[in-house]
Length: 181
Image (cartoon, rainbow, N blue to C red; front, side, top):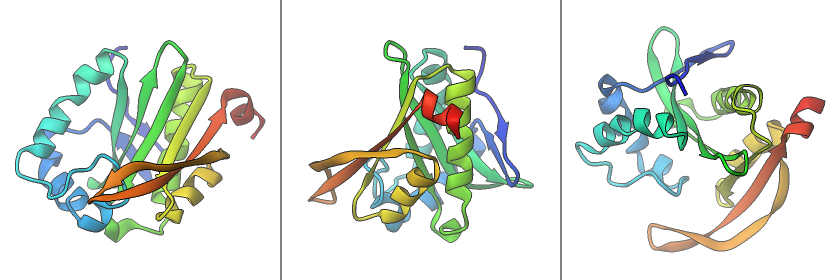
């Protein structure tokens, strides 16, 4: 791969993160309500964590493991992240995203995720994109449904967050289903 892409939608720019984004990532992702809806965001989000996370993006992209992009409102307001964890052997990926709480329920997550799904199928040549969400966060499930993903089942108590086992619903969309939309 030749470099982390920059993508755009009607309202958003999806671009590579840079170290100048670290304080904003810490502020938004560090919100306990945001962290509680994900399996991977640390809480508390301590000094240095965002820098370390951002510094790993280029190498992970170049090795074909991930594509992680900042979700940015014009002119340059970072509001979240969207990404794919790639499985080259199976031409599949897992979609992930988070949006800062002040930007919830405005369609930004769906818009960014739609563009990432398009990129995965049309540019990366994927056959399957899947995503999981904690069933206590139905808003994330609605994003997946808007992407045209199909519900595949619930992985009972498959995640632990803040000391509690959580169920995760699995969704996916195949390349042929994406083309039919």
